[in-house]
Length: 168
Image (cartoon, rainbow, N blue to C red; front, side, top):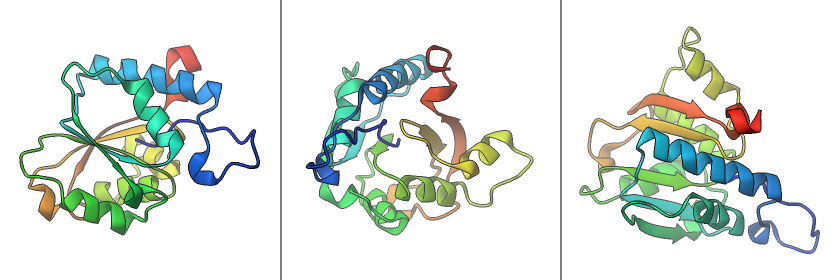
């Protein structure tokens, strides 16, 4: 998941310290409902240490079952290669992992996970076009986390807050 829309109102804040804006907070709350409706409940949440990603996570809470949450400096503006390295280090006991980070890394990771983007597949075309703030890409991963590599997952869905009825 990419963090929700952030605020640029305070030019004195560092990029790392920028909070969500009101639209971003509302979008993240809408995505919480999407996660619940889809039955998505991660065992592990890897989240960038940036304020806007942590606030996105807060808006997704509470969870029915509390996941292991790991704020990570390494996810802040990370490259797709760095994101793969983090995912490869996930414990084998984790059935599902949610990562909350930043673009362009999250978009590049999602495209890499999907492998060859089939232009006939509308969802894959949608992913190829970009990864808006607050968007969620869900993948199935057939093998162990330590062997996850480009093309090693199947895109199940791609949802952006602006596509939801209450944000249209």
